[in-house]
Image: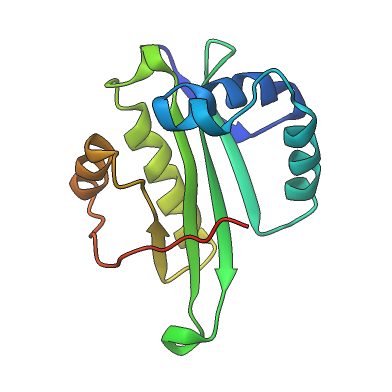
Amino acid sequence: MSELGIRPVGLADLPAVVAMLADDPLGAQRESPDDLGPYEAAFHRLADDPNQHVVVAVREGRVVGTLHLTIVPGLSRRGATRSIIEGVRIHGDERGTGLGTELIQWAVEESRRRECQLVQLTSDVTRQDAHRFYERLGFTASHVGFKLAL
């Protein structure tokens, strides 16, 4: 495998990122790769927020993975700062290569660098392979998550 780079997402990366977000049964139902307008608006909101870090993994000039790391200051846990990992996606032909591990390790190290005391993430209940992956990396399925669509 050639060398991997992890860097902040750029506007030009959006088509590749959105394609990865849509490239599974769940994403295919909720993403719209043919209309990048909402993603471009979100990109600008994220770029303006210093606690939002959307990154891409690039190999040989091609976007092959992405994740979104949010830093959340808080009062609980004695005023602890935590991070939340969202939107982890690996390009189909890169799955099983260790790229997901590298991206998650980047997020954990970045969280440490930003003095977070806890890293958390959620994963859809149907993503059993993802659950095993996160557990292999040391994450614990310690909570039940709830969502309310608005």
